[in-house]
Image (cartoon, rainbow, N blue to C red; front, top):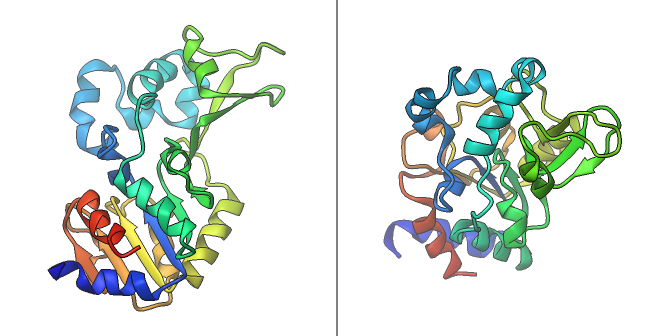
Length: 242
């Protein structure tokens, strides 16, 4: 057990754990971290990814948006990994109050987590911009180019927070409340550079802040425990004490 002893002790004695996760949670499911492969995108697309997945670009050029989106942001074959599964198990055991995620892949729910706050939305939900009709991911993927509503012909937009768009107020409130009430806050797989999401961990009032990320973050000095390790390795240890 060694270096994970303190963490597993906290897990054993806590019943109000909150997990806050970023892209690194899903990389072990084969979904690449958006920021680390920017060079690859630039070779293939005429615009930088940050521009393509912005609100103004979507409104101006939905064809190019959807070409990139379907090619680079949808991973229909991805399955939950050990981190997703152990978090679901922690919730079932009455230890975990909430998962707050910056990911849009729906893998936490697929693993069985019930209380998931999706700060940046989900690719699994899509809506007609004109009449509000709802569509699932398979509908969007089987349409050629830009998907249109079969009821009114309007453009179908993913329920994903694009650059220039604000986060849902209710999600922000729920996330902050969960963090404020947590006895242990585990932050994993995020470089904590995307705001306002990253700033939310400042609402934590306890003294059991755990950061798990391969690289150092600007918040390492605030944390009570820091592991520069893979989430899979850390959650294998957590699973043993559930």
